[in-house]
Image (tube, rainbow, N blue to C red; front, side, top):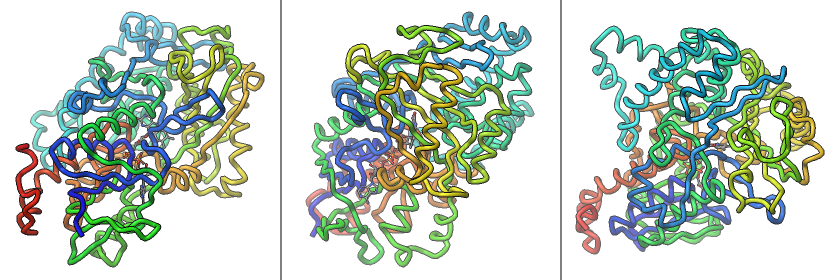
Length: 533
Ligand SMILES: Cc1cc2nc3c(=O)[nH]c(=O)nc-3n(C[C@H](O)[C@H](O)[C@H](O)COP(=O)(O)OP(=O)(O)OC[C@H]3O[C@@H](n4cnc5c(N)ncnc54)[C@H](O)[C@@H]3O)c2cc1C
């Protein structure tokens, strides 16, 4: 029996965005989320009474401003702030780079490492601004094909630009601009964050580009924090979806997409309950969706093979801490709140350091000297920790899902301690400061958060898996081989990150198809085109 217009499997931020747009258009929408809370990888959770941490995703900026506006997210409690300083990199010799939103300040910071690099920096900035100007307008639409992209190339300069962005490694690109290893390392971090690739891997230049597409309160390319942590973003979207009429149920796991005559007609829950719907959108990742919820028998063999071959490898390890005092960095001493505490902090002293951290992971070992990125949300946001105490969330990149020795069940605690060892080298008081620590390994991310192989982005975001190749070539427009089934999560264009674009674009695909879907079924109740309501 058809009880709903649309069922969204999964209440990650993208599923919620899709639900909100569909409900706003007048469809009767039901979201089914297996966890007790919505948000998926974009959540805030309590790790100790009074200490609330962005368990997985930890910085905002990518969520499309159009979505914030359309869904009126500020009226549903979303409050984002730009980090300024924008990042802090302490080095083992106690020097540091502290970037701000102020170009003149940054030029002087870089000059302390290389005068030539300070001169080159504005050109480098301009390079990425051009990338953002080109790509940003394409995010809230189905992906452009490679052929269309190629047709834009009219000059040798444009061709070289495309080469540098799509084909080069970040290490090579940075060598084109800079000489100081510290300066290069400070920019290379974003090119390998969330990607199982070293800075010398071709395509990492593009990954950096993906991370420049942010916009907070009109500040382009910015990263920042949301009041209440990342979960506040998902909560605001959920509230918007409810406001527009969507129903959201948590603690319910979908076991199968119900398919009749090659068409999605609803879902069956793990407890056997069934819900009928005219369309189903899946916010689960492509492997989970197609190989799990749909099943190989309902799909063409070449599609199954393509989905099986999507690289799910970009796993990381999160260490979440409750602290009694702030890290006392040797580079800038002190445990009272200072500007460097209030931004994104990277432990990545050189390009080689990043490459070695990746090399270990490639052999199935957690990095001996891990690349760490962390934030102390409580220094900006007093809602997440008791007064005078703090939260710290560390992302240790390059944590391989498959370990050469042992398993994450046994290796998590030693690795968490290794992370603290590394931090201790920069802020010797860190162990003394810890009140509680909780980790999430790649295995935990798969089991608890439904991220296949712990992949933080529902599939690697290197260029061969982006644009019209995401999730697989031929199926990049949110529709799937099962009529009435749509993919609305990060496994679809434009990929991972708290962007909301995949959810938006999938909802638009549903609305575009709606008249033909309803017409073909001969259903009258909702036969009018919801886009006109
Ligand atoms: C450790 C980590 C750090 C990250 N850091 C950042 C960051 O700082 N900034 C940033 O922008 N991005 C970051 N990301 C990436 C970003 O969080 C994700 O790309 C994004 O949140 C994915 O959103 P989504 O809605 O597409 O999918 P998800 O958040 O994965 O949501 C999918 C939802 O579907 C549910 N689900 C799955 N199967 C079923 C089922 N059978 N039945 C019912 N429900 C189901 C899941 O429980 C989940 O809630 C990070 C990710 C991770 C894992």
